[in-house]
Length: 265
Image 1 (cartoon, rainbow, N blue to C red):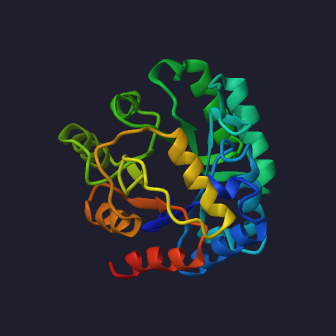
Image 2 (cartoon, rainbow, N blue to C red):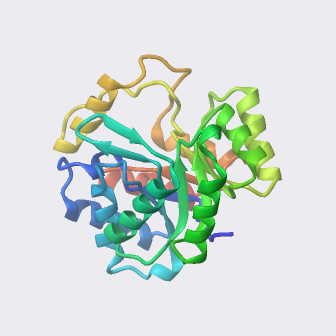
Image 3 (cartoon, rainbow, N blue to C red):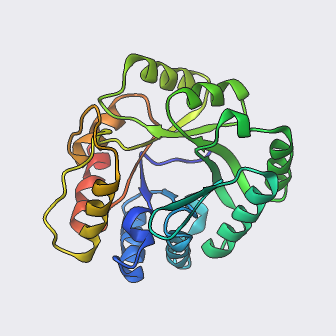
């Protein structure tokens, strides 16, 4: 198993856009690493690869041996809202190869299939994934999903990591799936820990604040509830349902507040 840290930093969201300077993203990654964060997650779908480029820039001056670098495949982005799915073996290999180039590494620690469905988990895909793993392109395989897809992922048995929402508003069935995964030795990486209701737009203090406004306007109109980001991290870590809790931020002050959650454990 990979050496996970309680908190992980997501190089995502506004970090895949021109709203945040590359130097700012790199600085936040370095600060998180100095504070003990070992897990850094990104994806080609975040800014059509821009987020991966930024993580790659940060990795140039970090000790790679102690870090867990995670990226995804199967979902790519174009334009402001365009998304393209392709879980064919050739597409997954092409995506991972491009990701490794952008990250500047020979292999990642964790490859996550980004929202893959049960029907897309074909035998040819499994064979290609095994070939890529044997070649050193990645060490461990995970999937990002929610709901019924988690049950199906556990049944298939391909994955040793699940990336999924963990927040106070999960129902009993959702919690049961997470508990089952952990009992099976599958690691859970928590996302969306503040809840599934849309966040209220905050006061615009920087260009990066435009990103959550845009996301709010184009996101789901409803949800079961929402709490503060830092409180969400604290609750997820204390829940016993997650091995690592991901967060992202574009502000140093928010980074330090979030990091204090792990320090209090």
